[in-house]
Amino acid sequence: MSSPEIIQTLSNYNAILFRQIWESILKLKEDLFVMEVSYSHGSLRNQIVHVAGLDGRCHMFNHGTDHRAQILRLLMDLGAPTINQVFI
Image (cartoon, rainbow, N blue to C red; front, top):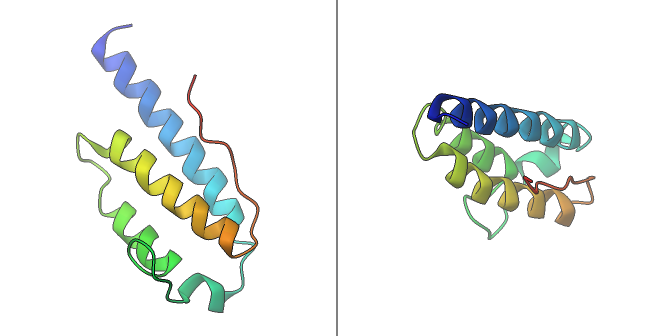
């Protein structure tokens, strides 16, 4: 695979996983979405705002993986469904 194809594949993968994460987030009540927690950037809302600010940066794929894991942990703690983010 060429470099542009690799970047496109990783970008598509990142977009698919965040669409799935949004499906889980939308199942939460508003108070859980904005509830402050002592993890990472605080509330799930703050975490999403942080990740949204990373789009367009070269390291967004690896950094995005880290933040997806943090978001998925928050979703699990809040009782929302989560997804598997393994890329094979």
